[in-house]
Length: 368
Image 1 (cartoon, rainbow, N blue to C red):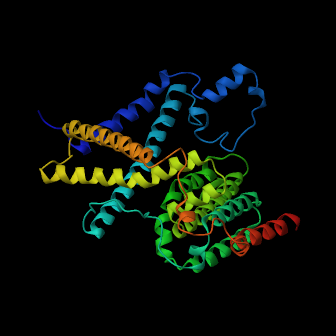
Image 2 (cartoon, helix red, strand yellow):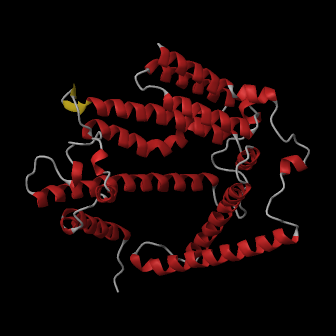
Image 3 (tube, rainbow, N blue to C red):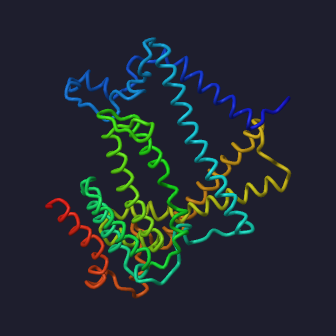
């Protein structure tokens, strides 16, 4: 039996998706937007207000300017498949290249699972030394101030950016280390770049293109506020180890059950992924290559075996915890080692400098 290559499989899947979006979608439900349908059924549909994409070329699951309902919906479906497929394929390709590069850089796979995190950058800067709970509160306060800032106050966003640049400089983290991890913002950037073209309202001429004025403002607000929030969150992740973040959340009185769930996830996610990597190496050392559709049974059995091993490991860990006196709450390793249970007033004041200056900037921006 001839095996189907991955390229042919992707091509067939793309053709099927195009057929579903361009042809079969016409025979789908006449109420594709479930929220709008329920709103009209319940009786509050009349309170709906126009949004930015009303009147855009593809609003209402149709193509503007085409009177044929079947053709209009088909074109919109095909373009939706193309856009989503391009974004998903590009992201998968970028992540695959990044994974291959990191593997080749390490020169192999470690047999044991590490206790650090790929985002954290080891250092001894003043930002690194601050307790996690102070940085968490400062991050939340800073993000709230940024979101509350009117998007027309350009100088305020420039001030926020300058504050973050100063904080990054204090961390002594290489700028390239930060920039590489900002790839998480790519989907929001793509969406923001599309908003001027799909939003309605008065149009602006930008060269040969006519863009929506409201869409430009919305895109600017999303990019400015989103970028500042992402950079601030990355600074927190780069200067705080996961176990310290969990300890900080517990000291901020987050429910300890939730903290324990996050702690086990952080600890054993790398253990499970490391085991999956070793299983992959074992398969490849025996000549296995996942290049066709016929390889799926082997991959499915690998996932099943990994699930069984993870479940059994969880049972053993739970029994080991019970045998050591576990009663539903884990001890705080920092307190047990003699470390201070909380942050000092000086540390709180140091962490509060960023949100305090941002708050002053916001107050000046809204009162001028």
